[in-house]
Length: 272
Image 1 (cartoon, rainbow, N blue to C red):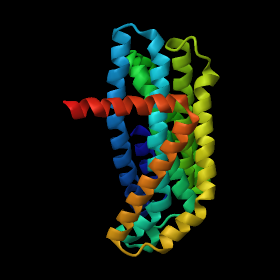
Image 2 (image 1 turned 90 degrees about the vertical axis):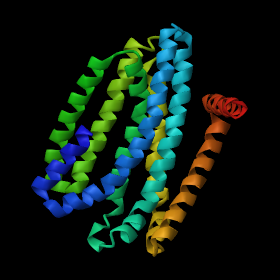
Image 3 (image 1 turned 135 degrees about the horizontal axis):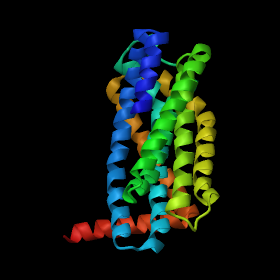
Image 4 (image 1 turned 120 degrees about the vertical axis):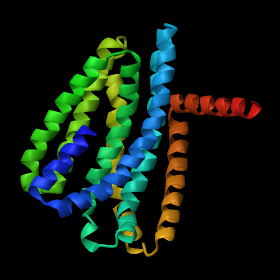
């Protein structure tokens, strides 16, 4: 939230109210998606809290990896749907040509969503362990980083510079929190063993951003009605979620454990 407010203020000062309005239109949807993901994050805090309360340290890392897989699934599903469909959605929602940003700007917007969702399992574990001061220090460091980078980059890249500064700040936030977890919570786990999940996932995101360029252009060119666009976005979300779930299930033992846990939870709910 702090980082997003910095972006809006900088755009108001350098690009005027019209660009702020455009930024707000895209960011409104991003905030809604982030809010959905944050509701899931609250439940993970409770789960980690129970583990810490019962002093079951051996369960912390396996549980963390399962929740990380869950948020990777959420991040990929929401981000790909947003990236492919947001310009088409805005074209029928707002109906103004100047609101259609370049695809590279959409990628940067999506990057902030993607990294913010990936950050949730880290902050859930940190908050469950009561490391609030460290978390506040990270927020301050990242806010200052975002402000400095955005002030510099906005003069060369405009809105892209502001968003790039935010993306870098989110990346720094993830690095700081993984380092904190490795030092104070998962002391037996090497930092690289936590970071590797993020490195692989971020590289995948960059690759998909390039590969899906033709699909995004096609979606934009065929976006003619609001209801049709919403239905197509729903279909894209379902397909991306299903495909990502399948890939994770086939390639990750942690994902298989997560899905088994989810199935057992559903069975218990149905019995009750």
